[in-house]
Image (cartoon, rainbow, N blue to C red):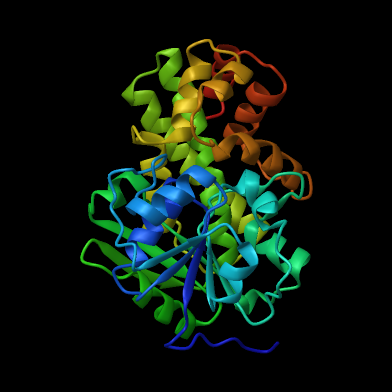
Length: 336
């Protein structure tokens, strides 16, 4: 396939029923006549059909049931759509897509996943390319500093749509444009996807630091070093023209490190306060993508040998059992 053009009449569907998937459906229903929605949870599916409400995530959002088409039949949802928005947690991407038997050959897949596919050591775009044979021209990313809880309240949010074809990025951005969603476009598939993965790891480190009692002066240093580490990893592993000070890179890092809504910061906070990693994971009600990302980035970096001391510290705490206080103290001498 040499090109893939999104038509103006293309139909949209969303895969996933968590908070981000629910927020994205809310955005899309502002511009789409009806949005297909793959929901495999029976309780959520029934509530959406009868009440227009997701009882588990962002339950305050009320959908017009005439503008959503929830279903537990993945093949039917995908077959009826031209643009499929993948919004399941990265840990469950393979599981969500497992029942699929219809072809994706003529579909455009827009990933809203900020994580890596566990066990595959691939981003979602890389996994879709290798597992389903999709051209990168058929794959896009939507990312940016965007907690679903704030989107549900219609707080001003900036998102970036990433496609290899600028025309496709522009046409997709029109689908998500609302008075509270500002859109920009990019062609940096690799950089935007890996930045979203790395920022979750750095938010874990910040949470650990807060749990250990470090204060604002140190947190500022830790986050600025995380930003430099992200830039170093992207430029060494995939050189390209990109400004990592843009909101889709640095902005997403900052909000994930500082926000009360950040799952990854929360996981780090629990570990920093002395909870075991397993107990902290069990305490979480939603997936903290950084847990899986730390192991995957460690594996991927064996191919590159890039200096990433913060990511290495998080890995050592989560997977090697290094006490958080000892690991953080060792890290302090490596920061500038």
